[in-house]
Image 1 (cartoon, one colour):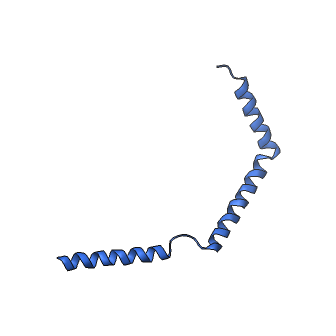
Image 2 (cartoon, helix red, strand yellow):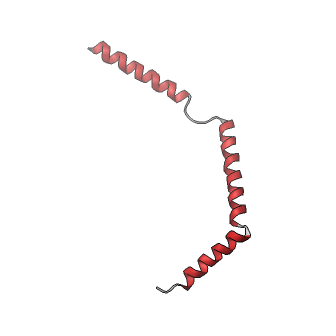
Image 3 (cartoon, one colour):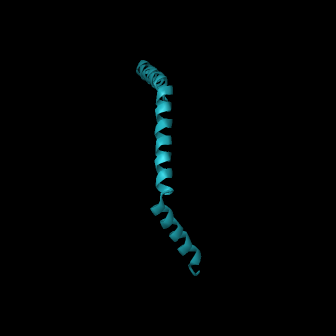
Length: 69
């Protein structure tokens, strides 16, 4: 019984070590993630600052400020 438990614990510990070696992203993955986030931010900025969206946001804010409580 003791040997079975010991073998299972050893296998579990070795598996955890292997998982730790591959945990996280490498530098190139971080760079690709940052580039994707910046590209998304630029697209979102362009959409929000466009004329149609800006006018719609202004009308929503104006209606909210004019509303009676």
